[in-house]
Amino acid sequence: MMNQSKPRVILTRKLPDTVETRMRELFSTRLNETDMALSRAQLEEAVKTADVLVPTVTDKIDADLIAAAGSQLRLIASFGTGFDHIDLAAARARGITVTNTPGVLTEDTADVTMALILAVPRRIAEGDALVRSGKWRGWAPTGMLGHRINGKRLGIIGMGRIGEAVARRARGFGLSIHYHNRKPVHRETEAEIEATYWESIEQMLARVDIVSVNCPHTAQTSNLLSAERLALMQPSAYLVNTSRGDVVDEAALTELLTNRNIAGAGLDVYANEPRISQKLRTLPNVVLLPHIGSATIEGRLQMGDKVIINVQTFWDGHTPPDRVIEAML
Image (tube, rainbow, N blue to C red):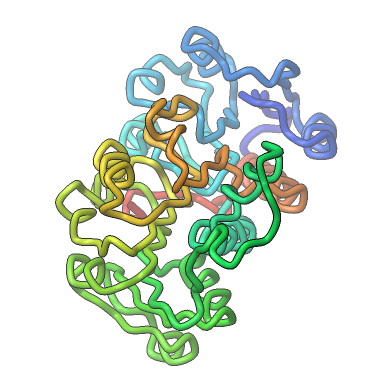
């Protein structure tokens, strides 16, 4: 056993009550009752005193912060699936283990992705705004015309857990599945979802009707959808991003949408959250969500359970089940 006493655990954000209560029972836990993101100074104070830090994706755990940590900090148990906000190399150099909460957000994120795939071509947000404005004059043969998705081609960028879950949902709506990935998925999976693999992302982008970004944000995927690649999309095509904002050149996307060189977009993530450009916010052909891809009660509780298991397993002297290593990047 690493230590007979309870570890000092510091949470950087407010978590569900049941999760916080269980963590208080098991560990010496300091809560963030205001739910305001910690300042840099507060994060530095936290890493100087915590045995275990429980950050979220909004906390930048970079090399400088890790260098400022006290020798007692042994575990960074992130509350979230993504780990691009943590400098893994710096953590490894200091002997700090990093964990995340994979697997439990797959279905929730796929649901929101599918909702955006439906909402943008069918102009759901525009219709809602029209009704609320009081300017709707009733049904008309040419009123609020959008596009059907049945029979269209969906191009998925990143065929991991979430990508596969999106593909299965999309098949039910009559979409044909195309995907770009570092390598093809297993033949059985590919056959099950009747997917077509494209080694060239450029070739896929030029041919599909809807693009869904579902890859993780890494050094390799940063700005993956550059201005040059976005320009390959058809003028009638739509882009949906529930991954990370930095995967897409947001400025280039905004220009393409403004000029109708791309028909529309559905976004749940942004390059500089929560700051979104005024130009993007005023475009009628874009559905904007406040990063809610994983925001379900069930998902948050399961994330909390995973954090607790990772902390308890580590403190008992074992390798935590959701350890993150640099090879995963």
